[in-house]
Amino acid sequence: MIEAIVHGLHGLLAGFLHMSLPNVLMIGGGLLLLYLGIKKGFEPLLFVPIGFGAVLVNIPLGGLMEEGGILRTFYDAGVMTEIFPLLIFVGIGAMTDFGPLLENPKLLLLGAAGQFGIFLTLLLALALGFSKLDAVSIGIIGACDGPTAIYVSSQYAPHLLGAVSVAAYSYMSLVPIIQPPIMKFLTTHEERTIKMGVVRSSVSRTTKILFPILTTIIAGLIAPMGVPLIGMIMLGNLMRECGAVSRLTKASENEIANVVTLLLGITIGATMEGHAFLKPQTLVVFGLGFVAICLDTVAGVAFGKLMKVFTRGRINPLIGAAGISAYPMAARVAQIEGQKYNRKNYLLMHAMGANTGGQIGSVMAAAVMLSVLKGMGNI
Image 1 (cartoon, rainbow, N blue to C red):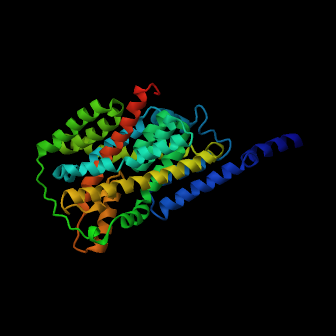
Image 2: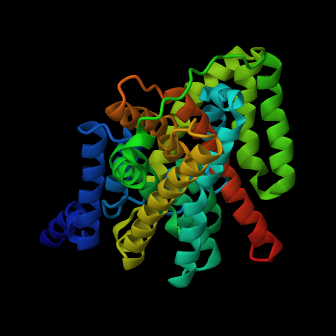
Image 3: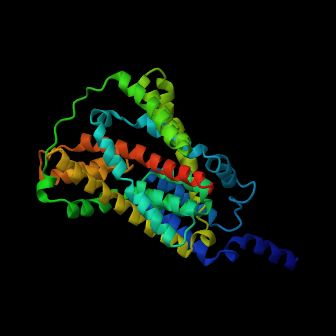
């Protein structure tokens, strides 16, 4: 009888008995993400489910990520099959207005320049001994594009998925803190006060409809590995602009995006089990991700300065910082910084053009890298 009671108590206390320091630390990490999302407003749609997923997976004996566990089922069905990040891309496309970019197509160059940090960080990761696929997954953090980072890492570096995903969304939420000092350091007071003309909406509906179709075809032919990524974001945008499928557009923006965001977040959090996550490699990934976004900002502003020269002072270099994929946060940062030095300066719509160019650029950067690796036989 006593022995049975002891065994019963052991069963009740099994969770406490199997709790390890890594589990405790990662539960603390999950609680920190919940605090940042709820109290500080840092990407709450992702940080809340990711943080709670991290708490869940670090409770011993829960079995959530074991074969047949509920989070393992979601992970296998949605992340490893690419379904979750690709559905997110449909929603992003449905919410994105490429009008400012089409008004001034040369702003696409800023979106391209804003990806240089990805390639430079890729080389740095390779120099530190990471494999080619790991280095690609780490470099793409610099695009500040969570779905692209998840797509690449889940397929080609799943052991880095948690670190890459959390880093990507963390730095995306910190864009208003990371970018302004770099923007100020690289530009003169005169450059920061440059006024740009008002963006007038003159792009025809036909152009807006043709843009996602032609972009998909051309980008797909250049980098076939990126067809799923560019195809889904452009499908969402085509539905938005054609006006013939408003129900599908609204569903992509709302119901589908919300459900997938929830499931994607909690399954990413479930990859943050203490023993697997708390490694020196994780800190290196976070460090390289920070380097990547800084280098992307530097490249974007530097190219903005070059465009200022070629346009004889008609481009404010600050909008170059918006050439990353943190849409529309990076564009708002450019607007805020511009008005600090010239209250009559309205850079938002110009920066939005660079920002949407950055969305396309981040997808193309991932596609190009993966296509090159496939050509080399590494995929």
